[in-house]
Length: 389
Image (tube, rainbow, N blue to C red; front, side, top):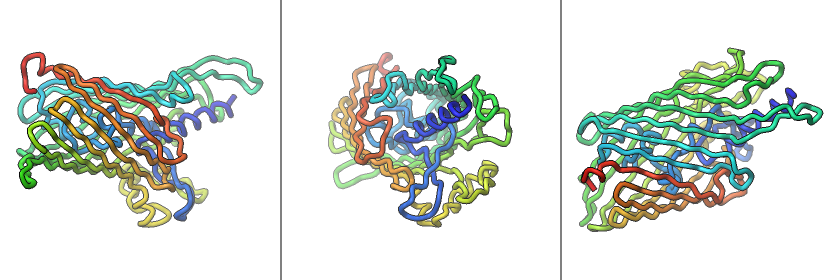
């Protein structure tokens, strides 16, 4: 029974770590051709919640704000053009294998005035139904592991072009409550975390006869206490703290046509596992692990560079009502090897906006979203009161 529970937890972690978001860092041994990855706890926190970003390889740090902008960069929400809105997203998970695993999220925002915005979100990850048996194969019971995060955010302009923002987060992870691992009872894991972000947007750029908006952003996310699933205070796992940097250029081709291109770079702020039997790296404090994550790779600077995941995405809008999107996600082979194209569509009509995205794998690396359609539904309440189009 204990061995089964251990295997269950490992399978859950591995399945999450295969997701299309940067939830992995390095582990193992040195060498350019050696797989050197490790998962953090609660990696669902690094899964982009919305289909708009999903259609552009999950870029979002510097693109124009919508309700899901709280995930990508809280600071940019102060630049939201609308006064009130929210978004609902449903993402099937491992759809080719099972039909009861999914990620669902709700994001919303409200502008207080021209300088400030507040908002929040709920993300819920259901890992389906798991049947427990003992070593003889006898039925013990069913269990539905799940995780969720509740966020509250604040964003404020510091000038006409620059803003800062933050998100506070409560995290709950219930993977195998009531079971035991090595004689220790498993319980739900909880933690708290915060995001700190900055955003710059200049809408006064001219490219020949075209008007353009240049933007860039920085988001340091999931800064928080370690999480544990047992009463053993020494057995704690790091959260998927992440440094994200992005830039974008949005060009108004004419009265009806707009084209945006954006690129993001992400790096986990997680420690490199020791390649020896020494487990001291697991006992680091969170600040020490974050600071050390920039220079602790066994392969030195070249391996640190390979830990950086980059994404590039493009978005075309016609008359601010119909959008076509595409993107490419790249991760080094020795750091997980997740490489894929994405495509997406967007539609706006009065109060409603509907976004779709589809992931196309380019390698043999399995991905929970391989050939899966995901969708988001946005609600614009300004349209009900005759507000800005």
